[in-house]
Length: 173
Ligand SMILES: C[S@@+](CC[C@H](N)C(=O)[O-])C[C@H]1O[C@@H](n2cnc3c(N)ncnc32)[C@H](O)[C@@H]1O
Image 1: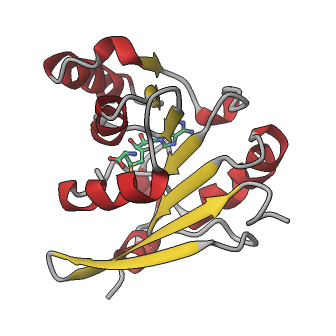
Image 2: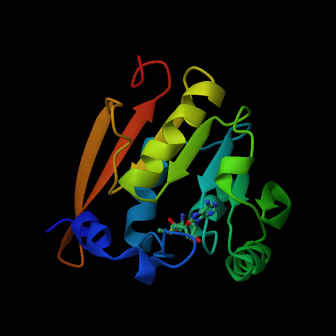
C-alpha cells in the first residue's frame, strides 16, 4: 500500500486549518531525497512546509542555503532549535508564513511533502516563478500535469513510498 492513499483519505476536519498535517519525512528517505535533489554549495534549497526542518537541515549540511517555510509557529521554532543543534542555523532562512506568499525565484531545489491537491494549487506559482533547471522533488504526491524525469519507490516500515523528481523546463514543457 502506498502511504499517499492513507493521507488522501483523511477528512479535512482531521487535517485542521492548514489542510496539510505535519507528517515528517522518514529519516530513511532523506538520503534518497538528497540524492535526487542534489543540494550543494551555492544551491538554494526550499522545503515548502518544512515542519521540524529535518530535510532542509540535511541540505544545509551538504552546503546548500536552506529556506524553511512553515505556517505553524511551533514547528518553525522546533526547526530553528534543531538547526542550532546541528550547527547549520546560519545557513537557513526561516519563514513563518504560507508558501503561497513567498517568492520562489531564487530556488535551485524545491522539496514538497504535501498533498496532490496542494501541489496542483502550487503548480501555476511554480511555473511562473521557478527558473529553468530548478529541481522539484515531491514525496508520495505528484504535481498533476507535470511529467516526472525520475520516479523511485522505496519500502520503509512495510509501506511503499514514492519520490518524484521534476525539472523546470522539462517536466512542465
Ligand atoms: C507532511 S508535512 C511535511 C514536513 C516536512 N516537509 C518534512 O518532510 O518533514 C507538511 C507541512 O506543511 C505545513 N504547511 C501546510 N500548509 C502550509 C502553507 N500553506 N504554508 C507553509 N506551510 C504549510 C504543515 O504545517 C506541515 O508541517
